[in-house]
Image (tube, rainbow, N blue to C red; front, side, top):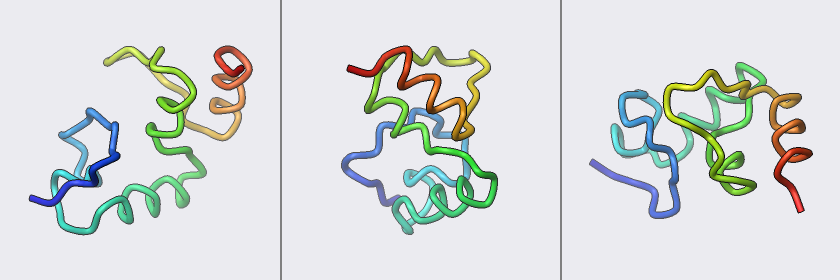
Length: 72
């Protein structure tokens, strides 16, 4: 299994996660673009205030709200 050394995603059950294939972040980014979402690594770069199992709004608006809540 290949991994991306900077990947912070802990959802290893996701088939797009780099631990599950040898295509790096490409599959995750492509999925997110198709669904108009932001990858979790961008959220985690702003703040680690993401709890496993919590409902997270991964949309652009959800990311904007996350930045407004946790940004500097």
